[in-house]
Amino acid sequence: MEIEKRKQVEETLDSMQSHWERLGQRLSHIGIVLPSDLTAEGGQLSSDPMEDVCQQLYITRFISNTIGRGIARAEAEIEMEAQLQSKNFEIARLLERLHCYETMNREMSQRNQEAVGKICVIFLSAIVLISHLSFFYLKLNISILALMFDKCTVCYELELF
Image 1 (spheres, helix red, strand yellow):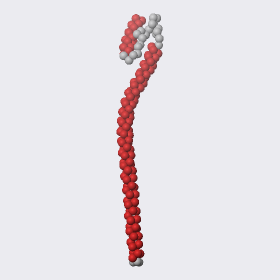
Image 2 (tube, rainbow, N blue to C red; image 1 turned 120 degrees about the vertical axis):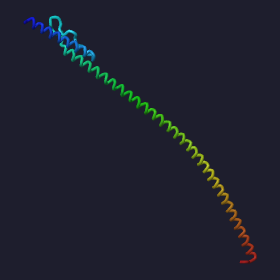
Image 3 (cartoon, helix red, strand yellow; image 1 turned 135 degrees about the horizontal axis):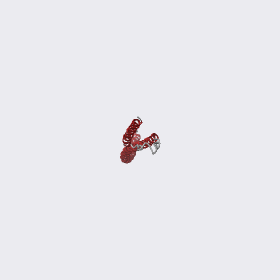
């Protein structure tokens, strides 16, 4: 009976070790390493395997979160770079339009100054013409007055009045 119990315990131990090895193989795919032997010499546990697994899970989660933040930061930088390029293109386009408007404004201002200059020349010419006409009109009035005066003198001399 003792032999049967011993056999049963050995089978149970073999089954547990088999499960332990399969669990270790599956967990190794995600980076968690289980100790290969649960017992040290003398049948005692070498360390707390669950503590080791928890610590490895914590480290794995920390690394995973760090990598996730790094990836998110890189994606955000890529997006920001694309937006920056778009904004730089828009700024360049607006600067080009501003340059065109400034050139048009300078040309229109120059044309306006030329037109104002021409208008001033025409205005001055008109003033000169008006003054000449006024002078001619004045001379004509004086001549008419002189003729009238002469007529009056002749009439007076002829005693027509």
